[in-house]
Image 1 (tube, rainbow, N blue to C red):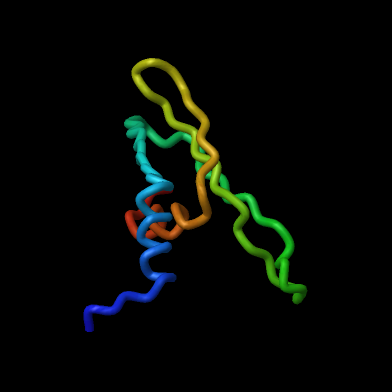
Image 2: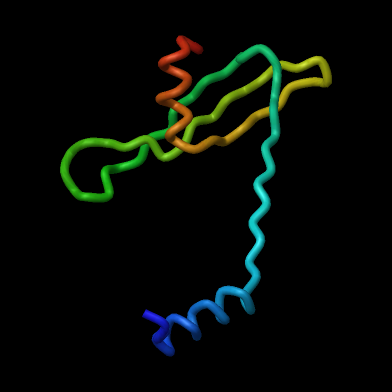
Length: 84
């Protein structure tokens, strides 16, 4: 159909006017793992379990040592790789 709804035209113009640009930056760290600590908190849903709040990794690099606080999803990837 050649007829276009007013809302679809408005939405198209809003998308063009907003012009949101997203850049993603990644940092790569290389070194020997000297510390791997999982920090847990109480389960937010109640219950008696605990959930991982974040993972603390200590790296020994050529430039010195670096401590990183990372997302809990990293813990699964590290355990699959066998990092300890």
